[in-house]
Length: 525
Ligand code: C2E
Ligand code: CA
Ligand code: CA
Image 1 (tube, rainbow, N blue to C red):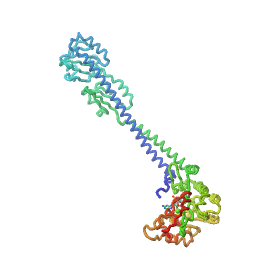
Image 2: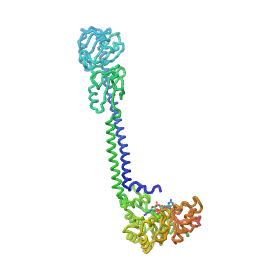
Image 3: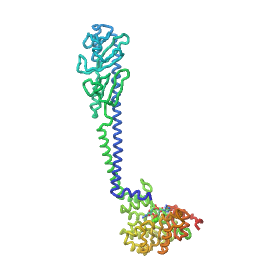
Image 4: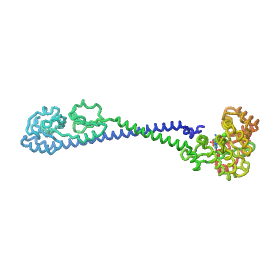
């Protein structure tokens, strides 16, 4: 039962298609939106890493170069200003990153590359520089020559003589990074921090560290120099989220629409069934029916199979209901007839003359205007006088069709027999059994299943068999799976048996083999 209608149940009604498509759309939107936001996020994080790393490298090289230049001019501090000022000026002029070199002796700045001789205590000139350190850095709002232009001030102590060293004011050119950051719409900003002051891309003035935004995205320091780089950027900026939502929405709508289109146009239109017929995806198998008296095969029931290329083997319960919903049961049954006719010549060798061939009819076919025509054509396509055709119809269908009575009379006149299929599962309308004069009663396998389960006898089954006898109908038990069930049914006077215990539905080749090696079933005698 669980597999019943897997195919039709989901896709037949517009509402179900809509629900399925909306679900697909939501899932696709979430998936694509999620992937987009993660991709953007990771791209952004990589961008931040690259940017901080670039600035770090730039400053590293910058300070290393500067330090080696400073080392090379340390000897100038041994001389007086007038002796070395020309050289000092040219060294500063040739170093693009340096505004001024200042020579320091005994803690006093005494010679500047920009202004020549001077005399000013270092603690007065740059109070925040600690001249006891080998290297110290500070950020200043400006220099006497360039008062409004912030600068980094660097101190390099003479390693040999106490109180002597080189002081430099620098041009730190953040322009390329500034360009890079302002181009980015998410407003990434950078800060170079020394002691408690910062040079930033936010402001043209020196800022206090306390004025900086509180949570930098990245902080890196430069080994050997008391300086840090901080990067400020958003990890989940609004525009990324908006872009992700938009992408998710577009893809979601697209997937949902595609899904709805596919289900409506391709599946719901019944194209699948027609394609299946055209591509020969349907097949028939035969399940032997055994005579309870001699335990020999008396005939077989034809069962259809669909080997769908994508869905695999689709059970008949599912595709019959599907075909009915699509109004394709007539072409499908005609195809079934054609498949049987295709087998008929070889089927003759597996089934003896007079063998009963049970064929299931779908209710809507019974009602179709071409019904009689189809049945006659089918009968004509079989070898003459070989098979006794039994059409199996469920009791539900008789309840529905008012014209059933005249149809049944016509079928009897043509020499076909009629079996009530799945007896006991529908809304049992016993009155129809009396009215219609039917030949066989197929007891549903649900009843047969219960044999040997709860009680030794089954009162309902008893009643059904009594009823069949009273109506002089022949009985067939379906779904016989164990010898106990078979034995019990035989003892109760059931006429025919069908079920896995005797044989599963078989292909034509398997049926021939099975027929050739029929067992004696001694355990039932
Ligand atoms: P049904 O007419 O009652 O067919 C008998 C079903 O019971 C078959 O299932 C058969 O394989 C299964 N069966 C037989 N013996 C046993 C057993 O011992 N144990 C169990 N558990 N099952 C057993 P199948 O082939 O899956 O067919 C299911 C239903 O689909 C059929 O029930 C019939 O109503 C419908 N069907 C099958 N072929 C056709 C067809 O060609 N045309 C129409 N209209 N309906 C068909
Ligand atoms: Ca049947
Ligand atoms: Ca049945």
